[in-house]
Image (cartoon, rainbow, N blue to C red; front, top):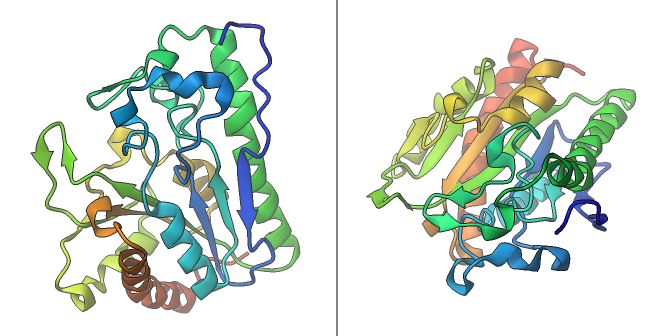
Length: 261
């Protein structure tokens, strides 16, 4: 879209179970494959239109199940991460990538500073504002907040198979991740790793730092390999596995006095 044309987009973020009184606040930055009409599918090839580059398959479904189980509010983007990746700051090239792995994104080539700003204003800042509002509402209600961001990842990256099935990611604050990793023996059939298949050096902990670490909120990023999320039954099973790790970890934090509002 040429610079100067309005990029106002309706309903770019959804907040579900806003009044949830559980300790957890869920974020799902890559929940949607929706590309607003004005972006003309970003010029993507038909075979790439619903690829992992466009969104995180299964992440929203698992987040919804966790929201119900934990009585947790959930904030999710309703726009494809190729239009704007809400887990990246505006100055990052990967916020609006020209290429994602091997997938070319013609609609992101040569964006002007004004076009990049318009997208950030339309998508990123409303998402961040929604997160801030929910946290502030919880603070006023005397509720503690523990930040959990939910993602999925592709089983093959640049032609290489990824053996890891579940990634537990963190930045400087590893308390919640440590507590979850301490219980991985309860899922002995899964390959679970710390800061895999991505880590802080890959820029994936932006939301954790911005919304969690900066506020001294316990936080963790969960990654599930998306071939384990092909059906609704898969999503339900993986949500239960996440709860198997999360619930005792949350109890550990409670005993340590973590997550105070």
